[in-house]
Image 1 (cartoon, helix red, strand yellow):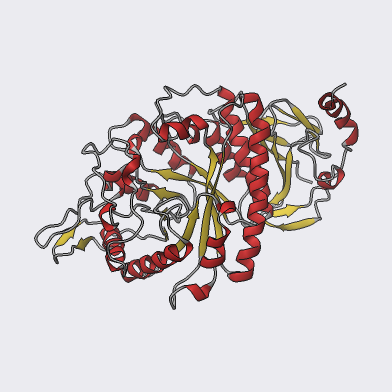
Image 2: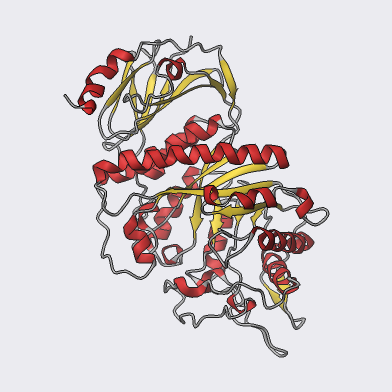
Length: 498
């Protein structure tokens, strides 16, 4: 008999029926589940996807949504594509405004986080590429250069001051003193400064911190109420020096806040892995990331304990997507239908674990992806804009678990020695929401699993699984204390009122 067979047959005998002590409070949730919107051609006017995606997005009504005009679309992410001369400037919001205004209108009053992450190429020594004239063409080589042309950073700060002025002050005054009217008077509650400094422009912790301070000072001149988010690291576990340096107030200019930090996590299956193998490698990577978060939290609490944390890109990036971004021709992606449920379960698993660590914001990535632009992270169908299971999982989480909910200790963790995953036990997060006892459940496997929740009879279950897919969250009554979860399903059990 193989060890694998032995574990599957013996595991149910090792897992006792345990009763949750609903008075055993373990903390209070601080966590908001949300998403990011990355600008691309599918969100431009006239696109069918744009209409469907924003219809679903408005229904979600999410807080702390991150908006990123990203460098592969220079016309949509950079408002001044050419350097100014003594007689003219190239300020042009023709392609920048439409997706940005859509986003700002859809998130009014919901604490949106803007991140115009791309510094104009001409501000870098040898940084200005021959970008395409077609504003909808994907162009990954745009992000070049290491050293700024203006080492004082004034040129950099002035660019972001003018950019924010366009959206908050009705227009901007360009380098030659000419006023450009926008008519926009938006409030910008949050601004995240640059993106993935550990990947882009070979930015060091020292140069990032200097640029952060310069940009914050510049934006505050036109939007003094804006709060700022720093770092946005791509591989936080590989770059501990960024946290040690950036979170130390001694490394910042006087008066510069360190209110928030951010970083990202993507699970990456190997190209040679089969879909059935992903459940093992991807969740193992996620658990490794949780360990990284614990370490980062220890650094944050030591150096800047009032700083909050948002992990604002969470998802799976398939190897085919990475190869396409580097110029390979991979053809139309062909995902198994269950992939979207697996990806949703991975996000829900991290929400369960990171809620316990008191992470403030956890953002799923991203509203729209499509072939050529990381389709494996899309939350909607890139042809119609209809939600997929990843979107519905976020909706379920947002409607189930909110900041202020009382977390309850789960005795099943102790009963399984913290190895419930190896024994086929689903994630369970008991909590109390406005006096109602609830349990968030996540099946991390490609097989059905069950869990015993004494007192569940008479309650209700809201579920996202392969059957519901991207359709409405399914609701059902509960007539047994044994809760069965389909492969990669995410559910919220609501117990009957006592």
